[in-house]
Image 1 (spheres, one colour):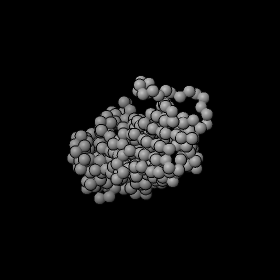
Image 2 (tube, one colour; image 1 turned 135 degrees about the vertical axis):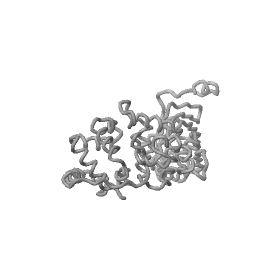
Image 3 (cartoon, helix red, strand yellow; image 1 turned 180 degrees about the horizontal axis):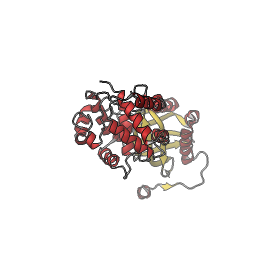
Image 4 (cartoon, one colour; image 1 turned 90 degrees about the horizontal axis):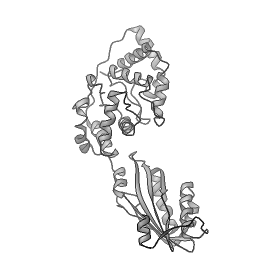
Length: 337
Protein backbone atom coordinates (compact mmCIF):
# COMPACT_ATOMS: atom_id res chain seq x y z
CA UNK A 1 0.00 0.00 0.00
CA UNK A 2 2.88 2.41 0.75
CA UNK A 3 4.33 1.74 -2.71
CA UNK A 4 0.98 2.58 -4.27
CA UNK A 5 0.70 5.68 -2.14
CA UNK A 6 4.10 6.89 -3.24
CA UNK A 7 3.28 6.20 -6.89
CA UNK A 8 0.23 8.44 -6.81
CA UNK A 9 1.82 11.14 -4.75
CA UNK A 10 0.21 10.36 -1.39
CA UNK A 11 2.09 10.28 1.88
CA UNK A 12 1.37 8.85 5.29
CA UNK A 13 0.24 11.66 7.57
CA UNK A 14 2.45 13.18 10.21
CA UNK A 15 1.64 12.58 13.87
CA UNK A 16 0.58 16.15 14.60
CA UNK A 17 -2.67 17.23 12.95
CA UNK A 18 -4.93 20.19 13.47
CA UNK A 19 -8.48 19.33 14.45
CA UNK A 20 -9.93 20.13 11.02
CA UNK A 21 -7.29 18.38 8.94
CA UNK A 22 -8.75 15.58 6.80
CA UNK A 23 -6.97 12.87 8.79
CA UNK A 24 -8.08 14.33 12.13
CA UNK A 25 -11.71 14.48 10.96
CA UNK A 26 -11.61 10.90 9.72
CA UNK A 27 -10.04 9.71 12.97
CA UNK A 28 -12.72 11.57 14.90
CA UNK A 29 -15.42 9.72 12.98
CA UNK A 30 -13.83 6.33 13.71
CA UNK A 31 -13.62 7.28 17.39
CA UNK A 32 -17.29 8.30 17.39
CA UNK A 33 -18.22 5.00 15.74
CA UNK A 34 -16.32 3.03 18.38
CA UNK A 35 -18.09 5.05 21.10
CA UNK A 36 -21.52 4.68 19.49
CA UNK A 37 -21.86 8.48 19.36
CA UNK A 38 -24.26 9.05 16.47
CA UNK A 39 -24.65 12.77 17.11
CA UNK A 40 -20.89 13.23 16.79
CA UNK A 41 -20.87 11.23 13.57
CA UNK A 42 -23.66 13.36 12.08
CA UNK A 43 -21.85 16.54 13.08
CA UNK A 44 -18.89 15.51 10.93
CA UNK A 45 -20.98 14.95 7.77
CA UNK A 46 -21.57 17.75 5.26
CA UNK A 47 -25.22 18.42 4.28
CA UNK A 48 -24.64 17.27 0.69
CA UNK A 49 -22.20 14.44 1.50
CA UNK A 50 -22.43 11.07 -0.27
CA UNK A 51 -21.85 7.85 1.66
CA UNK A 52 -21.33 4.70 -0.44
CA UNK A 53 -21.00 1.06 0.60
CA UNK A 54 -20.39 -1.08 -2.47
CA UNK A 55 -22.31 -4.33 -2.59
CA UNK A 56 -25.60 -5.90 -3.72
CA UNK A 57 -28.38 -3.72 -2.34
CA UNK A 58 -30.96 -6.50 -2.71
CA UNK A 59 -29.14 -8.57 -0.08
CA UNK A 60 -27.07 -6.21 2.09
CA UNK A 61 -29.38 -3.73 3.84
CA UNK A 62 -26.64 -1.15 4.38
CA UNK A 63 -25.30 -1.25 0.79
CA UNK A 64 -25.87 1.56 -1.68
CA UNK A 65 -25.49 5.34 -1.76
CA UNK A 66 -26.87 7.62 0.95
CA UNK A 67 -26.76 11.40 1.26
CA UNK A 68 -26.19 13.85 4.10
CA UNK A 69 -26.25 13.32 7.89
CA UNK A 70 -29.68 11.68 7.77
CA UNK A 71 -28.52 9.19 5.15
CA UNK A 72 -25.43 8.33 7.18
CA UNK A 73 -27.60 7.88 10.28
CA UNK A 74 -29.81 5.49 8.27
CA UNK A 75 -26.72 3.53 7.24
CA UNK A 76 -25.74 2.97 10.87
CA UNK A 77 -29.33 2.10 11.82
CA UNK A 78 -29.25 -0.66 9.20
CA UNK A 79 -25.89 -1.85 10.53
CA UNK A 80 -27.25 -1.92 14.08
CA UNK A 81 -30.41 -3.74 13.00
CA UNK A 82 -28.57 -6.55 11.25
CA UNK A 83 -25.15 -6.91 12.90
CA UNK A 84 -23.87 -7.61 16.39
CA UNK A 85 -20.83 -5.72 17.71
CA UNK A 86 -19.63 -4.40 14.34
CA UNK A 87 -16.02 -3.29 14.38
CA UNK A 88 -13.63 -1.47 12.05
CA UNK A 89 -9.85 -1.63 12.25
CA UNK A 90 -7.51 0.80 10.52
CA UNK A 91 -3.98 -0.19 9.47
CA UNK A 92 -2.84 3.27 8.37
CA UNK A 93 -4.04 6.69 7.23
CA UNK A 94 -2.76 7.85 3.83
CA UNK A 95 -3.49 11.47 2.92
CA UNK A 96 -3.29 13.52 -0.27
CA UNK A 97 -4.75 17.01 0.01
CA UNK A 98 -8.37 16.72 1.07
CA UNK A 99 -8.51 12.94 0.52
CA UNK A 100 -7.67 10.13 2.94
CA UNK A 101 -7.32 6.42 2.17
CA UNK A 102 -7.63 3.97 5.07
CA UNK A 103 -6.92 0.29 4.45
CA UNK A 104 -8.19 -1.89 7.26
CA UNK A 105 -10.60 -4.61 8.30
CA UNK A 106 -14.26 -4.98 9.15
CA UNK A 107 -15.75 -7.69 11.30
CA UNK A 108 -19.11 -8.47 12.77
CA UNK A 109 -21.67 -11.19 13.41
CA UNK A 110 -24.87 -11.33 11.37
CA UNK A 111 -27.83 -11.50 13.75
CA UNK A 112 -30.02 -13.59 11.46
CA UNK A 113 -27.49 -16.32 10.70
CA UNK A 114 -25.09 -16.06 13.63
CA UNK A 115 -22.13 -16.11 11.23
CA UNK A 116 -19.07 -14.04 12.11
CA UNK A 117 -16.99 -12.54 9.33
CA UNK A 118 -13.66 -10.72 9.15
CA UNK A 119 -12.78 -9.09 5.82
CA UNK A 120 -10.29 -6.58 4.46
CA UNK A 121 -11.57 -3.27 3.20
CA UNK A 122 -10.49 0.13 1.93
CA UNK A 123 -12.16 3.38 2.98
CA UNK A 124 -11.79 6.47 0.80
CA UNK A 125 -12.68 9.82 2.37
CA UNK A 126 -12.89 13.37 1.09
CA UNK A 127 -12.95 16.17 3.67
CA UNK A 128 -13.65 19.85 2.96
CA UNK A 129 -13.58 22.60 5.60
CA UNK A 130 -13.63 20.09 8.42
CA UNK A 131 -16.63 18.13 7.06
CA UNK A 132 -16.78 14.78 5.30
CA UNK A 133 -18.20 15.30 1.81
CA UNK A 134 -17.61 11.82 0.38
CA UNK A 135 -17.11 8.31 1.75
CA UNK A 136 -16.65 5.09 -0.21
CA UNK A 137 -16.13 1.60 1.20
CA UNK A 138 -14.54 -1.05 -1.01
CA UNK A 139 -14.89 -4.45 0.63
CA UNK A 140 -15.06 -8.16 -0.10
CA UNK A 141 -18.83 -7.91 -0.32
CA UNK A 142 -19.00 -11.54 -1.46
CA UNK A 143 -17.74 -12.70 1.93
CA UNK A 144 -20.18 -10.38 3.71
CA UNK A 145 -23.01 -11.61 1.48
CA UNK A 146 -22.14 -15.23 2.30
CA UNK A 147 -22.56 -14.45 5.99
CA UNK A 148 -26.04 -13.05 5.31
CA UNK A 149 -27.23 -15.94 3.15
CA UNK A 150 -29.64 -18.46 4.64
CA UNK A 151 -28.57 -22.06 5.01
CA UNK A 152 -29.26 -24.36 2.06
CA UNK A 153 -30.26 -27.93 2.95
CA UNK A 154 -29.50 -29.21 -0.57
CA UNK A 155 -25.94 -27.94 -0.36
CA UNK A 156 -25.78 -29.44 3.11
CA UNK A 157 -26.77 -32.85 1.77
CA UNK A 158 -23.68 -32.85 -0.43
CA UNK A 159 -21.41 -31.80 2.42
CA UNK A 160 -22.96 -34.42 4.73
CA UNK A 161 -21.49 -37.24 2.65
CA UNK A 162 -18.24 -36.70 4.56
CA UNK A 163 -20.16 -37.05 7.86
CA UNK A 164 -22.14 -40.19 7.07
CA UNK A 165 -19.19 -42.56 7.49
CA UNK A 166 -19.34 -42.00 11.26
CA UNK A 167 -22.84 -40.67 11.89
CA UNK A 168 -24.66 -42.91 9.40
CA UNK A 169 -26.50 -42.08 6.20
CA UNK A 170 -29.55 -40.94 8.18
CA UNK A 171 -27.47 -39.18 10.86
CA UNK A 172 -28.73 -41.82 13.28
CA UNK A 173 -25.33 -42.18 14.96
CA UNK A 174 -23.07 -45.19 15.32
CA UNK A 175 -22.08 -46.28 18.81
CA UNK A 176 -19.04 -48.18 17.56
CA UNK A 177 -17.69 -44.90 16.14
CA UNK A 178 -18.65 -42.87 19.23
CA UNK A 179 -20.66 -40.76 16.82
CA UNK A 180 -23.94 -39.45 18.28
CA UNK A 181 -27.40 -39.52 16.80
CA UNK A 182 -27.88 -36.04 15.30
CA UNK A 183 -31.56 -36.36 14.38
CA UNK A 184 -34.09 -34.62 16.57
CA UNK A 185 -31.32 -32.42 17.96
CA UNK A 186 -31.73 -28.64 18.14
CA UNK A 187 -30.13 -27.00 15.11
CA UNK A 188 -28.87 -24.18 17.31
CA UNK A 189 -26.87 -26.67 19.33
CA UNK A 190 -25.45 -28.46 16.30
CA UNK A 191 -24.19 -25.29 14.62
CA UNK A 192 -22.72 -24.11 17.91
CA UNK A 193 -20.76 -27.36 18.22
CA UNK A 194 -19.57 -27.28 14.61
CA UNK A 195 -18.32 -23.74 15.20
CA UNK A 196 -16.62 -24.87 18.41
CA UNK A 197 -14.77 -27.57 16.48
CA UNK A 198 -13.88 -25.16 13.67
CA UNK A 199 -12.52 -22.54 16.11
CA UNK A 200 -10.61 -24.97 18.34
CA UNK A 201 -12.95 -24.84 21.34
CA UNK A 202 -13.46 -28.60 21.07
CA UNK A 203 -11.28 -31.42 19.85
CA UNK A 204 -8.05 -31.69 21.81
CA UNK A 205 -5.35 -33.99 20.45
CA UNK A 206 -5.88 -36.17 23.53
CA UNK A 207 -9.52 -36.60 22.48
CA UNK A 208 -9.29 -38.87 19.41
CA UNK A 209 -12.96 -38.67 18.43
CA UNK A 210 -13.20 -34.94 19.12
CA UNK A 211 -9.94 -34.28 17.28
CA UNK A 212 -11.26 -36.17 14.27
CA UNK A 213 -14.41 -34.02 14.32
CA UNK A 214 -12.28 -30.90 14.56
CA UNK A 215 -10.59 -31.89 11.33
CA UNK A 216 -13.87 -32.70 9.60
CA UNK A 217 -15.53 -29.46 10.68
CA UNK A 218 -12.50 -27.38 9.70
CA UNK A 219 -12.51 -28.98 6.25
CA UNK A 220 -15.89 -27.41 5.51
CA UNK A 221 -15.16 -24.42 3.26
CA UNK A 222 -17.05 -21.82 5.28
CA UNK A 223 -19.35 -21.16 8.20
CA UNK A 224 -22.22 -21.12 5.75
CA UNK A 225 -21.42 -24.67 4.67
CA UNK A 226 -21.56 -25.73 8.33
CA UNK A 227 -24.99 -24.11 8.54
CA UNK A 228 -25.95 -25.93 5.33
CA UNK A 229 -25.06 -29.30 6.90
CA UNK A 230 -27.19 -28.55 9.95
CA UNK A 231 -30.09 -27.45 7.74
CA UNK A 232 -29.89 -30.82 5.95
CA UNK A 233 -29.82 -32.75 9.23
CA UNK A 234 -32.97 -30.88 10.26
CA UNK A 235 -34.81 -32.39 7.27
CA UNK A 236 -34.09 -35.96 8.37
CA UNK A 237 -36.68 -37.91 10.38
CA UNK A 238 -35.84 -38.25 14.05
CA UNK A 239 -34.49 -41.66 15.00
CA UNK A 240 -36.09 -42.81 18.25
CA UNK A 241 -34.40 -45.03 20.78
CA UNK A 242 -36.22 -47.23 23.24
CA UNK A 243 -36.21 -46.32 26.90
CA UNK A 244 -33.86 -48.28 29.10
CA UNK A 245 -35.25 -50.03 32.15
CA UNK A 246 -33.65 -48.84 35.35
CA UNK A 247 -33.90 -50.40 38.80
CA UNK A 248 -35.82 -48.24 41.26
CA UNK A 249 -32.93 -47.41 43.58
CA UNK A 250 -30.54 -46.51 40.78
CA UNK A 251 -33.24 -44.54 39.00
CA UNK A 252 -33.90 -42.45 42.12
CA UNK A 253 -30.21 -41.66 42.51
CA UNK A 254 -30.00 -40.64 38.87
CA UNK A 255 -33.15 -38.53 39.18
CA UNK A 256 -31.74 -36.73 42.23
CA UNK A 257 -28.52 -35.97 40.37
CA UNK A 258 -30.33 -34.92 37.19
CA UNK A 259 -32.39 -32.36 39.11
CA UNK A 260 -29.36 -30.07 38.88
CA UNK A 261 -29.22 -30.57 35.10
CA UNK A 262 -32.89 -30.03 34.33
CA UNK A 263 -32.66 -26.24 34.52
CA UNK A 264 -30.67 -26.23 31.27
CA UNK A 265 -31.49 -29.56 29.63
CA UNK A 266 -35.18 -29.72 30.54
CA UNK A 267 -37.15 -32.02 32.81
CA UNK A 268 -37.35 -34.65 30.07
CA UNK A 269 -33.84 -34.00 28.71
CA UNK A 270 -35.42 -32.22 25.75
CA UNK A 271 -32.82 -29.44 25.68
CA UNK A 272 -33.38 -25.80 24.86
CA UNK A 273 -33.01 -24.34 21.37
CA UNK A 274 -32.88 -20.75 22.63
CA UNK A 275 -29.80 -21.39 24.77
CA UNK A 276 -28.36 -23.96 22.33
CA UNK A 277 -28.53 -26.62 25.04
CA UNK A 278 -28.60 -30.15 23.61
CA UNK A 279 -31.46 -32.60 23.78
CA UNK A 280 -30.00 -35.65 25.52
CA UNK A 281 -32.90 -38.05 25.11
CA UNK A 282 -31.96 -39.20 21.62
CA UNK A 283 -28.32 -39.92 22.47
CA UNK A 284 -26.94 -43.30 23.47
CA UNK A 285 -25.97 -43.82 27.10
CA UNK A 286 -22.46 -44.71 25.91
CA UNK A 287 -22.06 -41.37 24.16
CA UNK A 288 -23.50 -39.27 26.99
CA UNK A 289 -21.25 -40.98 29.55
CA UNK A 290 -18.22 -40.49 27.33
CA UNK A 291 -18.95 -36.77 27.02
CA UNK A 292 -19.45 -36.34 30.78
CA UNK A 293 -16.10 -38.01 31.35
CA UNK A 294 -14.52 -35.67 28.81
CA UNK A 295 -15.85 -32.68 30.74
CA UNK A 296 -14.54 -34.21 33.97
CA UNK A 297 -11.05 -34.68 32.47
CA UNK A 298 -11.12 -31.25 30.77
CA UNK A 299 -11.05 -32.64 27.26
CA UNK A 300 -14.21 -30.55 26.84
CA UNK A 301 -14.87 -27.17 28.39
CA UNK A 302 -11.16 -26.30 28.41
CA UNK A 303 -11.32 -23.09 26.36
CA UNK A 304 -12.19 -19.79 28.05
CA UNK A 305 -14.35 -18.84 25.07
CA UNK A 306 -16.55 -21.89 25.61
CA UNK A 307 -18.68 -20.59 28.48
CA UNK A 308 -21.28 -23.36 28.25
CA UNK A 309 -18.55 -26.01 28.15
CA UNK A 310 -16.78 -24.54 31.16
CA UNK A 311 -20.07 -24.47 33.06
CA UNK A 312 -20.60 -28.14 32.25
CA UNK A 313 -17.07 -29.02 33.34
CA UNK A 314 -17.68 -27.29 36.68
CA UNK A 315 -20.97 -29.14 37.16
CA UNK A 316 -19.47 -32.54 36.41
CA UNK A 317 -16.16 -32.13 38.26
CA UNK A 318 -17.45 -33.07 41.77
CA UNK A 319 -19.39 -36.11 40.50
CA UNK A 320 -17.97 -39.59 41.04
CA UNK A 321 -17.81 -42.24 38.30
CA UNK A 322 -20.78 -43.92 39.99
CA UNK A 323 -22.71 -40.63 39.91
CA UNK A 324 -21.99 -40.18 36.21
CA UNK A 325 -23.22 -43.67 35.40
CA UNK A 326 -26.38 -43.16 37.46
CA UNK A 327 -27.31 -39.85 35.85
CA UNK A 328 -26.53 -41.22 32.38
CA UNK A 329 -28.74 -44.24 32.98
CA UNK A 330 -31.54 -42.00 34.22
CA UNK A 331 -31.29 -39.82 31.12
CA UNK A 332 -31.59 -42.97 29.00
CA UNK A 333 -34.81 -43.82 30.82
CA UNK A 334 -36.35 -40.53 29.65
CA UNK A 335 -36.15 -41.34 25.96
CA UNK A 336 -39.32 -41.35 23.95
CA UNK A 337 -40.34 -44.62 22.36
